[in-house]
Image (cartoon, rainbow over the protein chains, first blue to last red):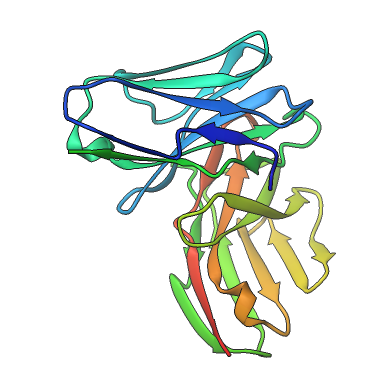
Length: 114
Length: 112
């Protein structure tokens, strides 16, 4: 158990819908990362937050957005969903990227878009 | 793209044998990390090697880094069936250590 929690574990929805994935980092970790893992794309970095502020953006679509709240939990919002958005979404946390960006991964949310 | 690439894509060995996986990347890094993923589950951090280090050990794991060749290798000695998993290398960017790039992974199968 990494100490990172993600909810829900599974999500099934229809095209065009909007969903919110939630992540709670390990106690004491200030940085949260979001990744998408699909069969044909591998593990793609989406976005990173540090203590409430966006720090880095990867291959995140405009239909996707994220935020990190004062209590450090983070949410990833996916809207206008398409079939191709079906994937495993992972959240990871780390203490401080400057010192050591070893990341601890949550169990993931499996999103299925029908 | 910065993305690391692992080689081979798949590796099948007998229990007790050593497994070697390679990772190549394209641009300068601050550090390189190796992660393991059991099927459909979250990734587990194995080892981090900094750009000024050449070799690192952790239990049965040995990682090397050659920044001149932009490559790293992960050696698992005396493999066990429980080592069966996918292994990924991950690199940050020396200009933006907040961005993380994972390779496509090596699928290791250790036969009992």
